[in-house]
Length: 134
Image (cartoon, rainbow, N blue to C red; front, side, top):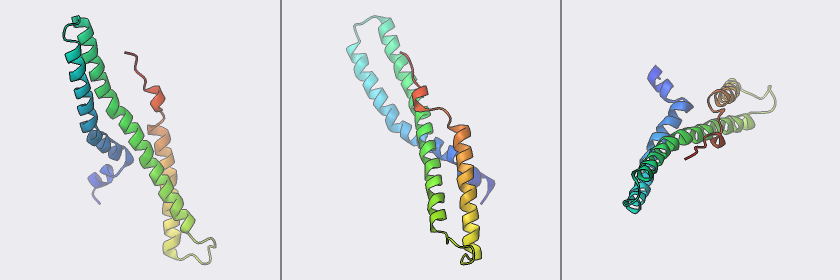
């Protein structure tokens, strides 16, 4: 693998990619809701219409950020689950383990440890901490 493929295979870039994909429909929903709200607020004061537009833009900023955290959390959880499944399938006695099984067990342990370190450092914020007051 090239260094670019290795970099793009990391959970943070996977989460960023999924956030961009999900923003297509999330942004469309926010835009449709704003269009309806703007039609209802046509005769209201400019400050009210401006506040509604600002709220829509803040939502368009918040949705991808929340998606990155949720997608990142699920991808690191999937890594942990995969590594636990590999460990569970590994033979219990070292005498019956072949060289390739021992290597896969060592790899799964290192994946599990690195996934735990990654999730602790990059995903320490919770969705509850991403609240906005409008």
